[in-house]
Image (cartoon, rainbow, N blue to C red; front, side):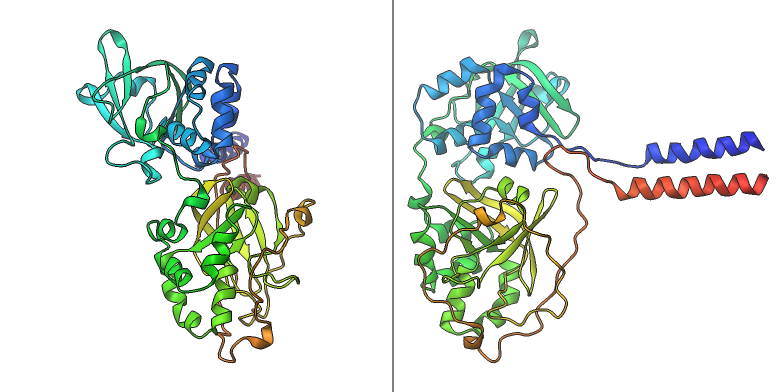
Length: 415
């Protein structure tokens, strides 16, 4: 009987150990920080915000270069936007570890890169050709490089199977397309960029409103735009059409913050923030909340989640949302809003001052038929913290409790 009880306890702990778990996410900054040879490469991944994009992805390969390789790149005196394009060409959207590189089917493979995914690369210029050469060498070259393979595989830096592989290659991949002068945010057509990346309905509403000029006037000084996806905007349009002209403008400006915030900034700071619709008072603001790598924007009416990064190049960031932000000044608040966490120590300092804008309508100016039954907060089950921290896993905890209960019951039954 004692043997049976002991076996039950052992089985319980085996259940705990074998429970599926993916609690630790990769962090490219920490991986590269282990070797000083990649200090400059690592620095520019952070400076260009590519590090955050890499950490948010899975099944990815980073082709790092040492100090000599980065010196060659920096000697070209490229703009920071062009450097970002060049480095994004070194992030492959597939997993290639040392073994896979030397066992490529038919000896060659074409890999899409983060440069291709941005939409900035024309044709096939955002692809990298990988070829298994004679003598155990592996060559790398941009697809638009005439078949030349100027860089070769040096070594594996770190491998987390089928999640991230970090390898060293001999030199920077040359690409006239990536190195070409990239337009700054203030030179960019914001609505065209939104339209081509799943926010066409919001962009069209912006074009038809004076709010477009408010957005454009605030780009150079720093601007963060939260753009509802097309499905969210289409579902919201009946309510949007019910608003007055001033109400429509205020709602659109409510989706802009006159301060640049990267995704990592939003993940590390909770608290209230003003918007482009704020006209000097505390109205037309919302609360930023985060749970690991998930960021939500909360009003008294609705909670929206950031679903993607459309652009993140200082001084402009554009993020996509799963819902339209509905301010309490235009829509009736829910009866029992979920309490927001207390603002972090830097919340007041980070709250932007009102930018130049029109006078937003007060709640009494809202149309009498403004929608009253707005959706409440949504709770989302989340996993994977891209900061690489080990997070609490409810499944493992439940498994442990149940397993110990079974073991205890068996022991009581036999004793």
